Image (cartoon, rainbow, N blue to C red; front, side, top):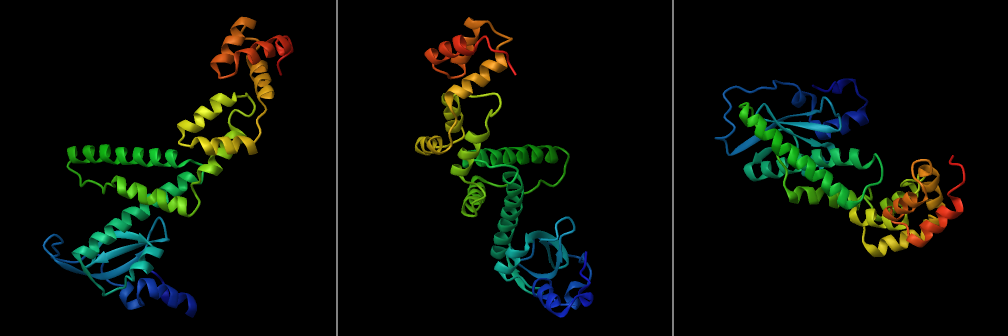
Length: 264
């Protein structure tokens, strides 16, 4: 995919040429002839084009062949330009940056669906890591070229960037979780605290969030009773409430007080 540079305004044209080169550089063959990638020690950037699916990514061609893609900011940070010479060491850096950029973008799309904790995000990335390994084993069996895999260090780099940009924040996640978890059905403080701990939230932060985001235990227990009143008798209902994390005395008192009220 090429750029119609001549149809752009002067300011935009200069911006595009800074990344993709001049009109003469952008045009030209995509595939080179007689090119042996593995035997070369250096390569030349022959073409930089915007991504087909994502225009914020830039396709990098070395000696006429597509090799990898980077996001626009990475291209600027690396100072990549057409006709630039690339060594093996530099190429390894670019490949690493490419995998980071793609993994970061996928992770960003995921974390923006709702607040997530750091542990949740790490678990998500490790699931992707495992799926990639499984996919590559399948591709090897099918005699296809394996896709690039990413290691734990790359995962931590992505998490560090997400935290730095405040897309992942344990405090905001904990507040969201307490405010929204089983809001209509009801949930005990004990269970809510346990779930937050399992999500990787440290105890001090949990305590502070509960101080600032009130969930009245009496109101929560009433919600559960209203939900389960028709399913259980009084004895069973008390047992259910205790299993849900409510104190036995409070559960028994609440069933005696609210147990005969009509559920919503």
